[in-house]
Length: 259
Image (cartoon, rainbow, N blue to C red; front, side, top):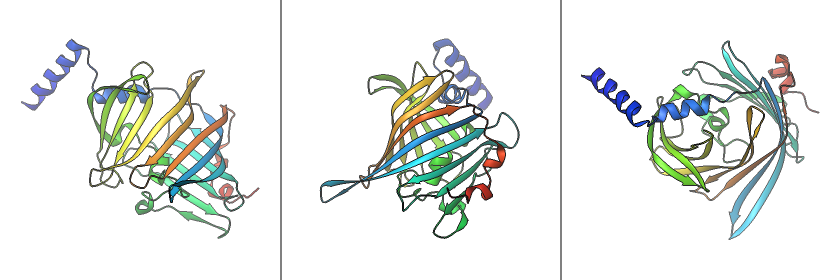
């Protein structure tokens, strides 16, 4: 009986031309990625105290290498350049291709002079005071979630699919995510994150994106914690693609180098 229901659902999807949530996210995932990428980033942390905004600005360079095959999906290195109190701080991540294998992450703090491995239980913590957790930085693989198409909705003048993503595993900080996907380009425009009590926790808005050749570049995005009113704005510039970064660049030894 179960197989019959699945077949009937597929037939109806074909007849009416309605994609499933999974098919929409497959199209998002299908965009090509560069073999390597370097981007300059400005991270602005915004808090509200006594009705007034307080801003802290940090400058970062992010390096990333993607792999077409093998056990790694990507390796990335984030290096803090400014201000002085965070200069030299580094973050290294190895993302594995297997959906059931957690990313390896390490943080280097110059003041301590040693590399700290980020344990699985710590991945729900905020990264360097931002509204992005270690889990958010690691991203998610397509097979990490079950998807359901909730409908269609306009976001900032863009017609979008609205997709619900529920994690298959329990070792995540979120109960679910609601994702808005541009119907024409199949890129994410907005994501809502819900906590374990199913309350809205954070909203990620992709404020500016552009197509550089075959690659989508996020130029500006904002993550807001709606429970604390804290915000993080990331502005990326000076993208460089396919520059040929060597694999030994993404090692714990290189992570400890302070310029």
